[in-house]
Length: 264
Image: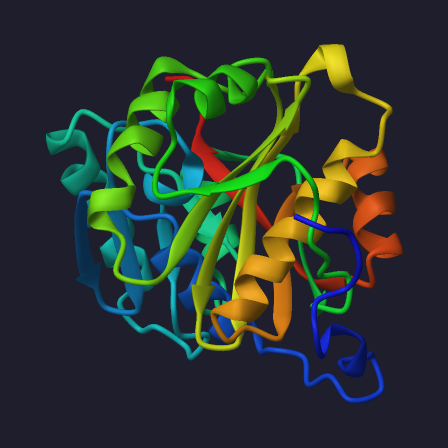
């Protein structure tokens, strides 16, 4: 591939870009990270897989309206997850019904750290040498992800099973340097929205700008599939990543956090 921006990429700027809503981003998140088992209890979407990534193994509200049955729902949802051998992990977003976090804290739930949802125009799209768009995560792709400290065997298996479960276009991007797998990203497109996940650089290749290169190539792939907006989720404590994403034109749209059952 040759360097340079993809055609039309520069035309999309912050001045002409229409930000997605929280509801649109939450829907895209659920579609981009599939779960083997899903169900509803009132406004809550229940998702369960192998207990790996939080997004595929958590409860999220899709409607911020008051929920008269809120206090009765929580133990029912907890029982549903217990039958699956999983903890009831609630994902708190701007779509929570009023009082959700108060009810959870009263039941002994503990809040985890904040994560940011960031979005912006796909103006950073560019072709890059040495980047391949895979139809699923192969062993080379997984070998780079395995160097990230948040990976577990359950997460690995969830990633391997994900391609067969996805209904929207997706690619697993792999950047090689000197023939060696050096950086990864996953991109999933739903309409105008392109979600970016699993951005990782092998320790042997860090501080060489590879994260930016593979994000640019991923954005180019997304533009070819009709997207004009990039979005992603990042830990609030990951300052280097947030700085990079801001340099690419993304900004914070909202935050979310998980509430986990307390000990005992």
